[in-house]
Length: 280
Image 1 (tube, rainbow, N blue to C red):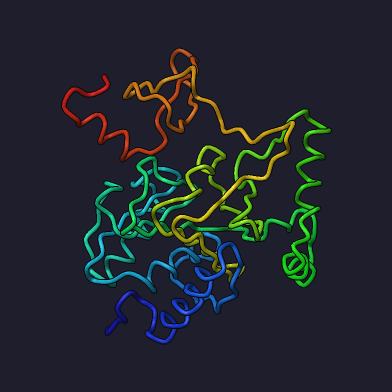
Image 2: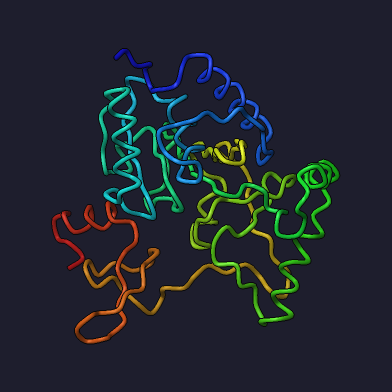
């Protein structure tokens, strides 16, 4: 059976690229697009996958991550679909990839100017928790009326003493649009600011594309007396590699019942372990 290069037909890829260019031209603005059917269910990364399929060229090197891992079922299946329909080479090394599709993490290795990071997004609308109407949220964005987002954070402080959003923490892009950065941990929010690479975000179920172009100002919403803070791993180190200062998974040893930590970005951890004079 004859199959299109990168699965999608050329007109579909052209339309997605046009919407992507608009998203890049208006940082943080959600651009509607005609989300296509793919051989994976909506809600499992179809937005990011459509972006990747519309952009991938024969000279690209592909990396796919799911929650920091290159070998999860979701990452393997998405990578296999892209490779089966394009034959592009893949890598687990962030620095070698030109096109990186990720679910819920920004890699530990900083992006380079030649790289594109595609983030899969389940819920692109940062105002949805306070406003269910799509028509009204579009008007609020147009009016730059974000008091609902600020009020939601303020209510968390009043109720819990601090802001409790651990992932998908809202950010202000280029001083204009409040944006949902996909469910990346707060630890990754600072990596979005003034980044060398292009970051694209795609929500297939919600039919939205938005972007953070290189060297764009991105700031996390916070108050003067409750500044933005990332998850702290200052007092712990990775049990496998000894790494510190990276985002880690908290796990429990089945035999001893002790809590331990492991670097979430598995490829970064392997690179450090394989270096001569490893941290261990």
